[in-house]
Image 1 (cartoon, one colour):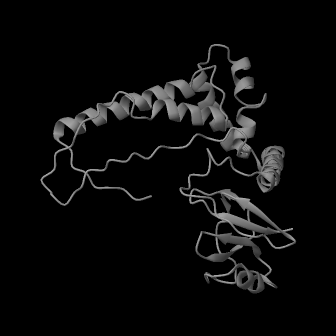
Image 2: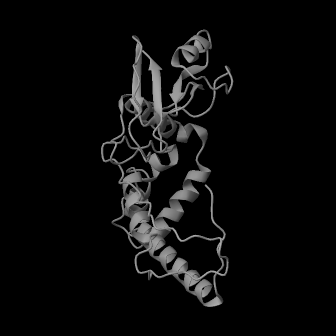
Image 3: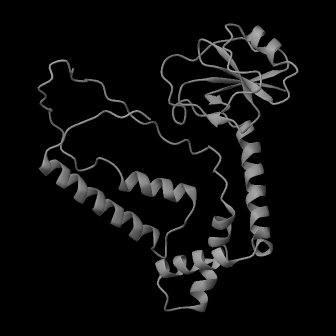
Length: 243
């Protein structure tokens, strides 16, 4: 992720430092609250409501560098697709929020604060044997497989998850292939990072490549990607999967 170097006054840095400290305390306090449900959706909502620019004053920034041009456009972040599959939980998170985790610790220690119960839970997990963690590892693996299957069927809502700009890429899909807009596969197959100008060339090159999972089109070139879980693209890419 690229960043732009900016210069702040001592007063501005002091304000930002205090703001980050305040928001961090708010975040931790919410997570440690008894009523907080520790799943991905609630963590996402908490981050969005805690770490944002609400309350910042908007004004013009003065600069001595005449080469810096004022940006008039504003990029908006698209909403999270409510239909997107939820990411699988780790074995620890499966155990932590089960009846055997924090809930059991709090039931056996009624005077224990929620944040202390979570801390105690992490200590217990660290001392558990591989055999004790086994069932939770299996549960996590099952949820991961379920997530991967759902992602294969999932197509991002163009108004939300996919952050690409411009018109949709148009192409004819060959028989025996499936097109998923706004998706891609991470990593290149053993076929290499060659960029093909036509779909036909990419399909021919993919033939016989054992670790090839699909073809990604970025609007200009086709590349062969390795087997993996389809991901949501922020570049308006198109994923082609062989059926």
